[in-house]
Length: 345
Ligand SMILES: NC(=O)c1ccc[n+]([C@@H]2O[C@H](COP(=O)([O-])OP(=O)(O)OC[C@H]3O[C@@H](n4cnc5c(N)ncnc54)[C@H](O)[C@@H]3O)[C@@H](O)[C@H]2O)c1
Ligand SMILES: [Zn+2]
Ligand SMILES: [Zn+2]
Image 1 (cartoon, rainbow, N blue to C red):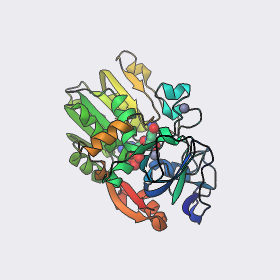
Image 2 (cartoon, rainbow, N blue to C red):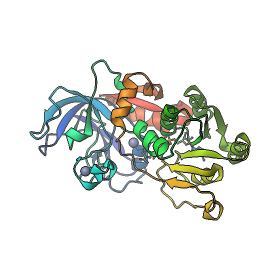
Image 3 (tube, rainbow, N blue to C red):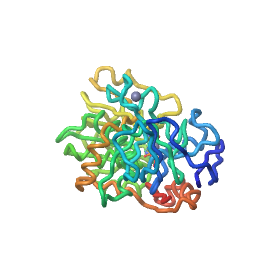
Image 4 (tube, protein in one colour):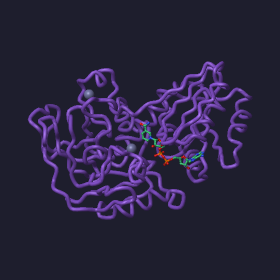
C-alpha cells in the first residue's frame, strides 16, 4: 500500500509499505477513505516530537471502512464505516476510567507517533472498540474528519476547560484550525462576545464568518489594550490560547478578567513566563490539557444534526498520491489560505 513516511527532520516521502494486519485481538484494520494533515505533523517534521522515529507513517485523523477485526472486538463488524479518534484508549486503565483517554497506559496519542498512522491506504487501530466511532449512512465524511482531532481539541481543551458560560466574554488567541474549532463549539454556550486574535487577516475574516463578534490583528502589538478598551477595562472571562508560543500565552494573562480562566491549548516547545506578580490576586484559573476525545459522541450528534458544520474548515482537496503537494499547501497557509486539507485515499 501507499503511505506518507517520516524519514527524519525535514524528510518525508510517499513509499510502498506492507499492508497492516491485526496484531492483537483488540485491533481493527481500517481502509482509509479520507484523512488530513495536522499542525502537529508539521511539528514532527521539524524534529520536535522525539517519540516519532524515522520510518513512521504519519497521520492521526481519518475516516474509513473496517476490513479486518481481531477476535476480541465486539462492537464493530467488517464493512462498518467509522471515524478514527486521534487518541487510542483501552477504556479500562485508571486514566481511561477517569475520562483521561489521552493518558491511557496502553494508548493515548500513539497513531502517527509511536505506531503507524492514517496517511496511508490502510491503518491498524489498537483498542478498536473504544477508539473507533460508527458513522451514520450518508454522513459527510469531510466534516467527520474534523472530529478525529481538531473539534474535540478546541472544545475540550478550550471551551470546556475555559468554562465558557451564557452571556460571558471569550477571547481566542490564534485563529488556526484549533482556534476556529473552539470558536464553533464555544457557541454551544451562547457567550455574549467572542473576540478572535491572530496575525493573519484571512483567518480573521474566516473567524467573522464562523461567528466571532470582534476580530483583532495583533501585529501592531496593541491587542491587549484593544481588548481592555472593548471590555471597559475588565478583560474577558475566558481566554483560550491556541497558538503555542510564549508571546501569546503572556497576552492571555494580560487580558483575563478577575475570576476568569486561561485555557491553554497550544503545544509549547520553549520556556514560557507566568506573570504571577500580576496574576496572584486576580482569582484566575489556568488549565492545560491534552485532548481526550471524550466529547466525540456529542460532537458526532451535533454535526449529524447540523448544529455545527465542521466541513466549513476544509479549504483544499488532494488524492493520496498528491499528499506531498497537500503538505506544501498546508505549510504555506499564509499564501495558500489553507485551513484543513482533505486527502482522499
Ligand atoms: N492540547 C492539545 O491536545 C492539542 C491538540 C492539537 C493541537 N494542539 C496545538 O494547538 C495549537 C494550534 O493548532 P493549529 O493547528 O490551529 O495551529 P496553526 O499553526 O494552524 O494556527 C496557529 C494560528 O496562530 C496564529 N499566530 C501565530 N503567531 C501569533 C501571534 N504572535 N499572535 C497571534 N496569532 C498568532 C497563526 O497566524 C495561526 O493562524 C498548536 O500549538 C497545536 O500544536 C494542541
Ligand atoms: Zn492533530
Ligand atoms: Zn486506558
